[in-house]
Length: 358
Image 1: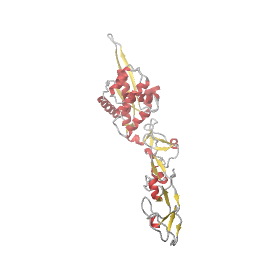
Image 2: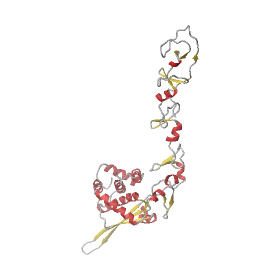
Image 3: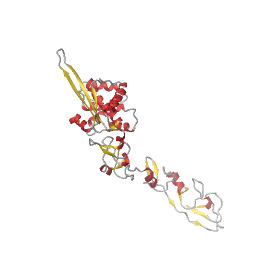
């Protein structure tokens, strides 16, 4: 809080009542001779009606403020030299709070501006967390509620309208469950949608040996094996097959993409784009790139796919990708993103064919 440094509270000066017939006193306001009662302020003399506020021009009665030999009502002084409260628009006459260059009465700030907890609605004055959806809450609530395994919001009535634990052990909030994609048919339709959009940007792969599977967490864990991570939403298994013939051997690679179900479509689409980049690398390179180059490129394709999607979930996924703190996925993406800024998708394909590291 601030106390205006220049604030000078002057108490109503002594009102001198005198007949004053023998004195020759001139009013500092109107420059006319004073007869009868007068005010004496700072060794100056005024008719009571001539002691007026510099701002509003009205007579000052009671407390006043002085600035550069000019006099003001308390409220007028505050409005001129301190300003008005951004909330109530009334002059600030005493203590005030400044935030982002704007001034507030303390009571107005607490009621309308101060950061409030999204869960308990109390003002936040100590440690707190922000989630990717703009919810702020006291740090203590992190210990009180589970997080959604998909969107990472705290599962509580105030933020997500609650949630539940599904059969594979995942905690999912009601917001994610409301729009969850479950069936293999739905996921395959999303696969076609993603592939169609990426094709328009020059992304080409051989699709005849690709299969898409709807997976719960248990199936995904089994498919990923030692590569499984808790935040994983998909995994691609690529099996090379070879038939030994008399003339020559015939080889091809089968790709099985396992996609985590029971989450909203945009999360699934982002995951499909990521796994398709793995397939492109397998089909078009020797796969000798560093891990951060590979995973960074896969995350980049997800980011690229969502670039024009302005839904709340899409924005959050892009922020997830951009702020990922892992060395492989996060740093890898940021290196690729830096190389790709302003470049068409084909530039990434060229980099992957030509380099082993980013």
